[in-house]
Image 1 (tube, helix red, strand yellow):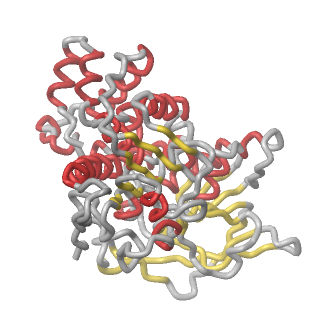
Image 2 (cartoon, helix red, strand yellow):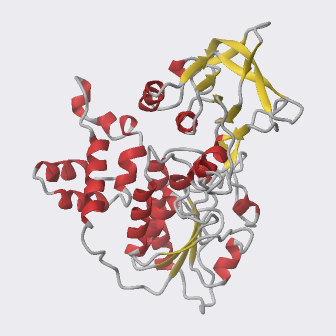
Image 3 (tube, helix red, strand yellow):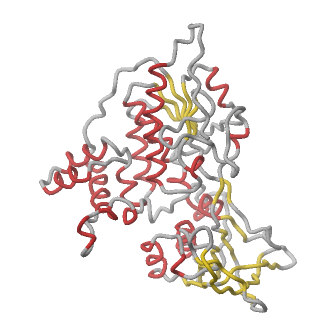
Length: 424
């Protein structure tokens, strides 16, 4: 994200917290969010010289403090750039879309964000639990971007109400696609359609965005019994497990077919889950879900594993142990197995080249796609990744869109705009 880390830490030491906020915001539009959810231990703190002999400087905590300080004290009035007369459409209001929109607005573009759900924020709102990222902070960060002149249209599904081509025909000079990875992966095993089996996407969205935890005050029920199993061991799995505890479950298990050393979740998230009472059933995975006469989940049949040689991910491959099946009673299962790209916009945009996995093919440095005037970034390009990675893609795409529109001929000109070469 190119954040001037030494500069903002120096300003904190001088107790110039407002100045530190200004320094961060030259490169990062969402510091209060990044300070909470980004894996600083694998990014900025990883390169801290103090970490070679001890603990690195807590850059993430300092960023969070500065972001919270700025939000609490109002910050300085937003300096609006005179409009340049050009319009950009941003599809999706997650971290990539919000960052691209904010940066483009600062450059003088008239930006409209199209969000499919009824609240903006994308995964920041529906995917990350309240206890890890308070929604009031997300809303305040979004309000700051709106103060730059960015318009947000909610309940507006691009690919259904309008296509990307129709946005361009309506006079938008460029389109940025940041629709994320919202297609959950499943195991395709017997009983997966029983009542009580959720994808992590549905489980967290119902809880965070649709207020299922307040049922029947809000008409979005979610079934959480006394015994919950979360399949998977990434950050989303930890979020789902800790959410289940807060919804009243007596026992919550992380079920993972490898050992703790191979878990993709942040060490911090694993420790928090353990501290809250989440139990870990390792070297095991379900092969069947079983239910009663009403198709309500009652148990799952699991198989034990042992670790073999490393696979293409570098982690040791789980090898099934013959004859090791056992049955485990459960009321609720949450499948946290990763997510694929949201297919709606790619499917309705002719000429948009995709990867074999269905992600949009885009240049890593610019976000340029095979379709002139259309850019993309975030999880829709990379697959499920971190908030900070999506924000970086939005920032790079904003610069590339500005460069593209500076050389784009006027619509009345006879020649066509320069085509962006497809990514090999």
